[in-house]
Image (cartoon, rainbow, N blue to C red; front, side, top):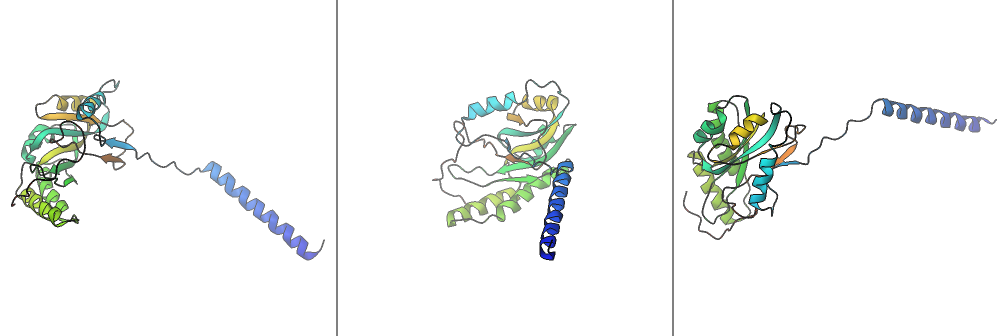
Length: 225
């Protein structure tokens, strides 16, 4: 065999060995599957509000492990202060508070909804309204009207308005059922037990949504802050 031919055969043999080795390594150490990120807390756009409320209630039914912790969204019937929300949900034992949802209600004006982190102390829970104000301030408005709306919303949040509309929590199903039965609670929706923190989407249910989920009217006058 000529030298060039021998070199070619040797190179092919080495390549086959390397590829085969990589195949074996891949079989022995498969890449982890991508986490599921399709879980959604909240209604779908265009969904009937009544249908969502029924669907949320069904998410708390039929479980054989009422003590298993689940991620859930608590939707309030009307905007409340952080103090009132703390008394309603935050002060409960075995409930981990994750996020607070704020929306400043203005008649016939679309206002920004922000979801901000919170903590399991009354101090951090109360401070979340200021974090919400900062979140509104940091938004980039697309129109002069939107800029004016953001300014009004941020100032009202800074003044600790009654603008909390929902809370994302982690609690066992028994606690979630108890919360769902309290006055002022519109819906409690729980995710499946395998849902992971940070890998699900939160879509708030606005108290102003009464028939179909979707953008509300935006033809009202923007008031002074």
